[in-house]
Image (cartoon, rainbow, N blue to C red; front, side, top):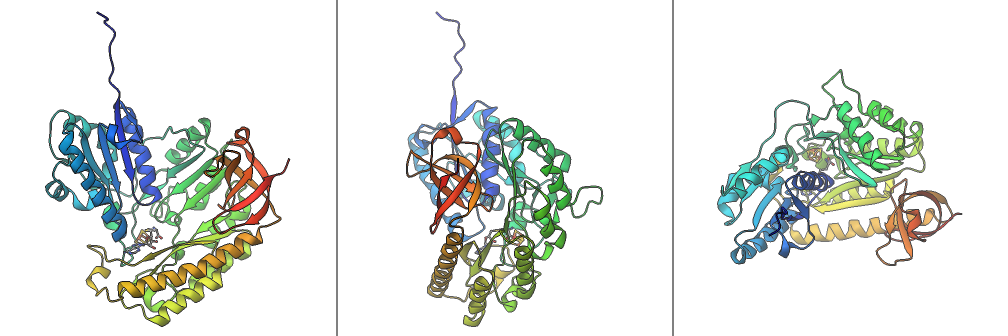
Length: 444
Ligand code: SAH
Ligand code: SF4
């Protein structure tokens, strides 16, 4: 008989809903699970562990997450050994209640407790039913383990949580108070990523402009950008998200100064009417927003500006909605993420009547999206003839002989080429601006 040790490899299937923070949290969970002997599988029917990383910022992703978890309940009837866990913002909000509500659920883990995943899994594997870890640590700073991922483009958390309490938003209650990560940790993580091949970092936070706002001994956000810009081997820096009320002239001027900072700014405005903005508790007016967007374009003409906006907030009149359309026309956004308002439990706005009918919300959304489609196409066409630097990410989905990458202002470009340019910065001449991407050719 062989005395060779047989190590059983376990498999985890992870499904991620929601924003980049959740995508990044899923990456962190996968890294922790690798340390517990779990490899990722894309097939849920062969998994030993199924993890659903949920989002609750709007009604739709929350419903999707619940129906997804429901599917795995049935799977568990056939295979009782499979472990099922819920992570993310639904987990934070539901806590122990989820365990009672979803039969067969083994554990619940909130975004502030990800580091406890190995311990929780160990308990569940040992037969403990219904483990739950939610909540956040106290304090205004947060420590996270240094990521050792090997991605060309990597997310780097610089802060977590939010202190803004926009009246519609569940983020402050499911992600906790604003906590910044020490700059030394952020810089060490980026250095480590670059050594493993990362060329682009995307700094993450709900409100990056107020990085370390209460800590006079820490770098400010523009100072942090300047330090990151000096890291040898790093080619590109991006960040998201910014709040208009905290966007300073210093940050606006950073774009011309830092070689690696890409010319793209995501600056949500949510609504174009002051009456609605006030009820949303946004802390900025329409005029202030327009002035900041104008400054961004004056200071850096090639900058691309994108935003989030919603329709159907309680009490949104036709004239309020028209002001949203006017603002979109004035700014000429390069792209927009648009949503229908949905009330979220525990928020201030959830106490107000959700008085805009689903039909009106839908019509407003369609009108807004049609307007934005025209603007996006117009702005993409403006790039025709230009030569732009592209970081090549890989093959295009549509053809094996077409490569795909992004220009500095975050638009996707497809161009004929082979895999030898993957991971490289190349020059591409833009031949055609389409609705969702650009087409070009390599400049040799
Ligand atoms: N921190 C970011 C975004 C957080 S949530 C910011 O401040 O901009 C992402 C987007 O979801 C928001 O910008 C908003 O447009 C949308 N959103 C948030 N709560 C919502 C709700 N209750 N209904 C519909 N959309 C919502
Ligand atoms: Fe939510 Fe407003 Fe904070 Fe963004 S700034 S996360 S919308 S509360």
